[in-house]
Length: 432
Image 1 (cartoon, rainbow, N blue to C red):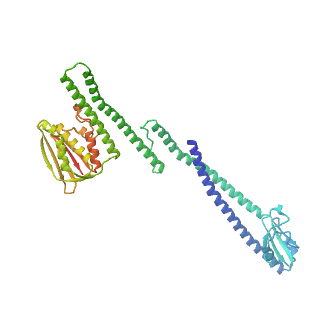
Image 2: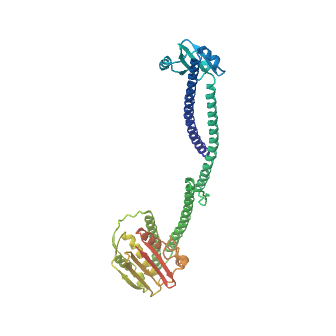
Image 3: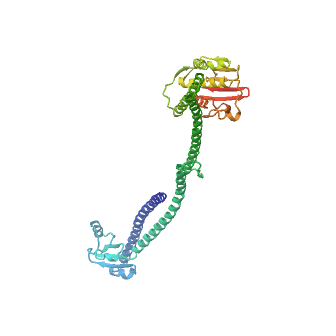
């Protein structure tokens, strides 16, 4: 395949070089031949006219022209008629009118003369034979052909070098692509220049980098989801085996409650994963509508009422009547997740503060603060990642998807979310 591309590219470039050289050469040769021929004709015509003027002034017989002017390259002879010359009707007319015409022998084509000059003088036909003019054009053609062949050879060498220079990066890219196809996402190619091939290589490096990140996320996701499913499944399996043995009715009720709780965790985990997948792919089945945020937040508090009352949490609410165009069910997930986390990590008898207001700039702001132990700086940068749990001591509590869902929903509504945490508690701020 590589050699095939090399041959095709070299052939195309060489063909272009041949065409660009051959056509100018043919045009130049034709134009040059005509130009030189016209110059020679003018020169010969002037020379013949001078010879005729000379013999006229000196009263010399036309037969003596050959003795006066003839050389090895020039023969002057008298002819009785025009039958031996290749003349068309126009040339015959010009010849009869006393004009000088240029033609060739009809009966001696083997001489290979470029042209003959003929003129009617004193009733006779004077013919000048030029034996060297063909050699001039032959040498001109040979010189042109040599120049053409030299140019073609030089073009061929340059084509091979240029093609090799272009093909080598593509060959490296081809080999690197095969490595990527085999699962090696660490491959990188050296970047060079700013041409199209360099841009292709840079994009390839970006692609492999992102593929490597996706592969890492996929592996982490599989590991995390396997762990999240394994824990409740192990509990369900263990307590189901206990139910098979001898146990009291109270123990049966306890085991069944645990099995139901773990099954609920699995159901919630599956629902959250499906929801994240739909949000990331933009596969939202519902339509956007006007949502009263303050009413939604109050409904979310009602859903979490059992939890915050159990911990005797004090709520401080400051909610303005504000509406937003959005997905009602998804926005409900934002409030329930944030309120549930605030209650979960607040101490017994703690306080949770919730505010909803509009800034002078027109942006809607939601702020929720708790009085928990806070989140360490190294954990703050990861809390919105899937399956990440800042409090590793609570591995059985939650599945690490809540804040991932919150961030995805907020971004879906063109919003932003930020967290500020210290040992005195954490504050989550959302801006729409």
